[in-house]
Picture: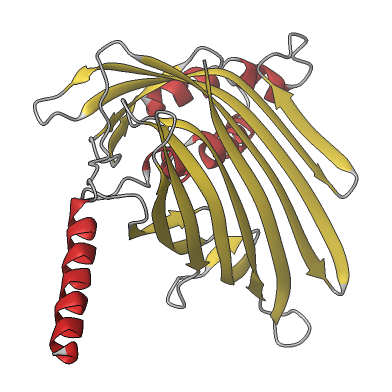
Length: 312
């Protein structure tokens, strides 16, 4: 009799647990924007890179601040959002080996050619198409922006130099990489607080990284959803070498990414976030004629913090 009663109680507890689990409300986190809606986003990144060359450390510090305005100008026939993105302000600074390189759209003096070129980007826009799941479908009008900035340069060699610098920091590949924090976290299916999901993305700058992102919805309070992120990153062993100043380079890197993202419950637009990255590894250099058979490794360490906030 006691065994039967124990079995009944145990079965009841299991049913209650299942009922509680099933009653947890699921949330579909999707962009929900109105035509004409605007968002002023403040984007800040702080990166420190250290490399060792012949046993000597070489450090580089880079900071960038951008004020970006996103405006939803409508939707296409597939319900993708059509966004106009406008550069309102940019400030860039890099320190390396005792030298300082900087520019700002607010620099009225425009002492250098770089200042003149990049000060012109203020108020200029490009278009971006994204779906409700945050996937960037298309980026357009970057060619006309680049032509505006560099089309009047008489020195073709300087034009190529600055055009490459622009594309590295503001080109389509860079935009897709950087805006992954803005739009890359949406879950494919409805989720409850405590639920986890993942996706895999590829990022390419000097080297290609495969990033395995693990997300968890940790809170849905105060009209905000809070999402935790933990990622593992690594280069692909099959990646091809890249040529830089006559040398063949292949990168062997791995790292982690941690942080949190808060988004508005009504629009699912990002409210603020802070993401930290740490990447370590080697750049394998190959150049015929160099001592040691032309091959040597340069150890790298890169640490960065990226913060995004909504200006209200």
